[in-house]
Length: 257
Image 1 (cartoon, rainbow, N blue to C red):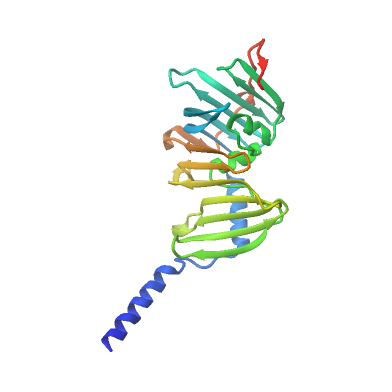
Image 2 (image 1 turned 135 degrees about the vertical axis):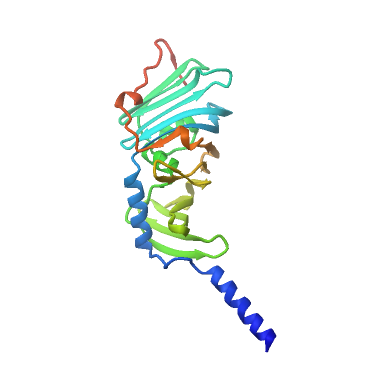
């Protein structure tokens, strides 16, 4: 009898640990919260450390980055030897300018997925990069899907099917949080277009944002590791003037290949 009671208590205890510590959400609830989170984060600025691709070489160092909704993004990769820029890129909402100071060349063109790829070799729309950076990934259009509780990780697995393909998310909703730990977009062709893993969420300006992110672009066989820096050197929903996203390349530079 005692053995049976012990087994019963152990089973009950295990079951309690594996269950959600909050009411079960619906897919519509998750979609609504994702949309709300994106709406509430409109800009960011960070003094980050990145492990990235610069041209055809791997680089690691300080990168100043800022972004605002409306396809506005600015990067400046600083030289380890000093404070000068090795490369800069700016999207002003319509066009982009990329300047490679090491190779004395520049590129200009429309502001789109290829703009981000010029700097990081990962194709992301400028607004999508902004939201991935602050932990609020873009959503497929007209999302419909399923939600499953992962007892081992204590997260919700969400799979959303939409116009662009299938989006897979892992979200930590414990303690009232809504931390998107993993996000992946699989295109209609069955190939992963991009993925991101976020860790070490912290509070910046009253919003929970990731401290570290890893972006991957399997199609281009590229990845980007980012330490977004101390909360004291980061800000969200900050006013960023339009001229901050303007970049004039030095006269006489050739076009980068």
